[in-house]
Length: 391
Image 1 (cartoon, helix red, strand yellow):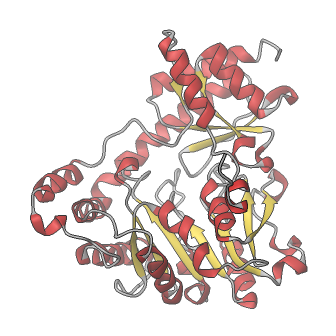
Image 2 (tube, rainbow, N blue to C red):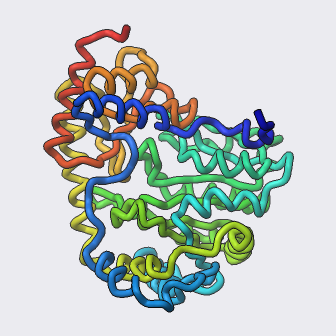
């Protein structure tokens, strides 16, 4: 067998890979599986997005190489949206970079800034692209558990000085996947200061910026003083506009970091199809009229899921952001064992917290990806697990 690189061998297994195979086997046996695993909602994109792609799909001009410049109109629309949504003014040519989904930029950015011995502070549990990007770049991941007693925030004052002094990247994600936690303003300010003192890059994954409920409106890190000197923020159309498979997002922020990421990507890809970028313009143009209704759908699903879980005996918290519930596993059972029982015994797919990092042990994640009727059915099935013991 061919020898792998040490960096490749250091990669953990990607979450849910085995569970997807188990789901296929159960469905082949006629089992009705309710998938609450991946954050891939059973909803359509805005009609204007689909129509825009139809309009430009046959246009030869949109079939040329996009390169990293991408579609100028998409860059300009991103800048307009950042101003409208957050009151943040950015240069569309120097402080914005179109991406093939935000994962593209998050995963490639460490290649521009990490040498052996450099550290990256990474939350645990977290989106696997953080750890994967740092590992493949040869950096040293410093994993910090997100715990309830810290409100699921990284306690920056507890990062050892020997690590802090070598930190080149700090990863934040608020509203948070998978815990659904939010960060107060002073935490963003502390994080900016942490990075400024060490000439580190603050990476804020803001994929759930529009998923605020009950009057809560998530903020951009770029709204805070000093952020432009240290921070880059990643946005995605995947969740907000139900466009997971379209693979379109962007990075925005510090122009040096944006330029470095653009240079890395110039050796990796030639950009997203211009037709999809044109559709991205239509998505952002529809933000004020279309997004509130979409988020209201997720709120209804959230309410049904939380109420249903509570009624059958789970300790479910009502989150004020994201499309997830982060639920304690009852009875001391491991999260992996619980998720396996949920799938095999009741046909409900949930994500075990441990699959997103050791810090996630003791919890399981539910994604609000099915309608209210199916969500209620899922909670009732999960409730039946509480009356049985793990074998």
